Image 1 (cartoon, one colour):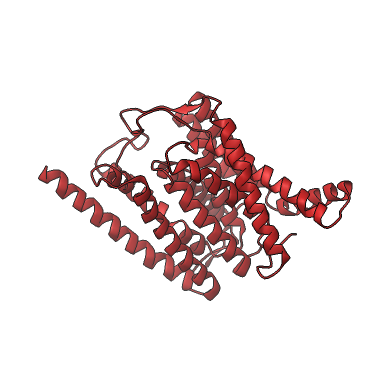
Image 2 (cartoon, helix red, strand yellow):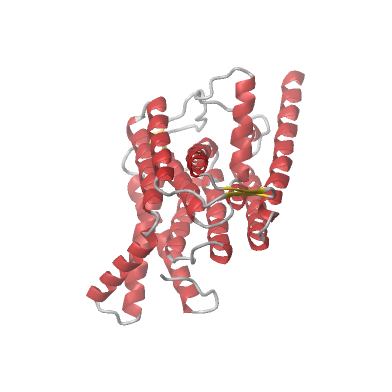
Length: 364
């Protein structure tokens, strides 16, 4: 497996993979913008002034594959590897990466395709949710789950409960990413930080090495952000659901404590779950588009710009990533304590924001 030595040649190779992933995504973006699949404004949640191309997720996938394949080509040519031998080495590397991850990546593929279906033809919401739930349950049933759920009072290792909990985690986080994809740069920018946190923590305290494929993916996501931050391109459901599934599934297979993974995801979990609780309490349809998320209210009544909102949530994600990394290295009860400390703090912030917003509404 091509791991990364930050002080040696492999670190430079990783940077090259990232640059090629970025270039590949920019090339793919030029194509997807011309396809004509757009996100049109409406009166519910899509408040942009004009239709915006929405196949950014396809561009990220294409950029990752282009950057990765070109990176391997450059890598093999640099070391004088014959083309046939290089192809065999690439296939062996890919098989090694997929070994034990087949169900996880199948879940990612299904999530991406469901999102692409919705991007192009507008899928039925309930049918889309049902298929996604079935894919999450199947992934968990075929091994996309942790070894145990730890706590200061012991470990829970009952297979059935771990399977159901893992399926629920996959479903919740995948949809959480989709819910958070409503402000330029916010969702994908946070996912870049979450994935980097997952990669570093998994390398230091988990079950994997930092593969150069991570660099191609991050480079492609940054290429997308260069267009998304200006509102020129959206990631679409394919990108939101696919990237959400990738983080959630890899987290379960990383060998890290589940509380470490949940800490990385905290900014999305607190925002989405608290908003759902608030909407349920007020008798509102949970499947109906809305503008009740805190970041949406910051953009609306608060008058924040897309960049200001994105930077706030990037800061939340970076803080959680650092805390998760520290917890992973410390081990023991640290991941559990860090998750609940930050989680309760985040809930407190959310409640304070909601009460301030309600007071403002009543004042008007």
